[in-house]
Image (cartoon, rainbow, N blue to C red; front, side, top):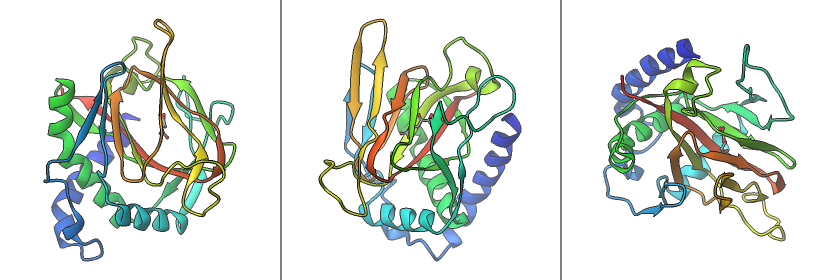
Length: 235
Ligand SMILES: O=C(O)CCC(=O)C(=O)O
């Protein structure tokens, strides 16, 4: 995992400097430098930015993902990462390098905002995972790191988890090609009984502390597209 992170850090640093030269993704839609409305939900310390990506950019990314290579996403526990569809049933997609570079650059540009919100100094973020959940896919309740339970090095270093929603969650009766139903990103705390369901909106970024218990409930209709990554503590 550490090796993967380091490889990605180098690639993403290169990405940031070379992206300006890319002509395929226009920069006039880049709103990363514009102050964006944020929503703070104190119970789980969720940090939400609506319209982090514009709708058109989300559609471009989803279209790119639809054309790209798909494989089952891995589950990381003790030992080797494996496909364990009792725990995490979702496909991981490798989109074009332009898309990967664009997302990397936008995340990098938002680091300071995350640091200010969570009062933490952040270091590297892991290679973003582009995910597609089909009907029946889910991810059971889990934490991403920083719980004291150490299986992987990332359990020790991960501090902030990110989901970027690429399409809208809708009511089950809206049977279109672009939205999905079910697939709630749900936060819970067994100590207090608190539970909060977040409905997906295309372009919305949600960040939360990696020790927060969260799950993705099964998809009922359509396909849910999202990007996830994890920022580490700066060392
Ligand atoms: O798809 C999501 O919104 C979150 C996925 C997740 O919890 C994870 O990959 O760790």
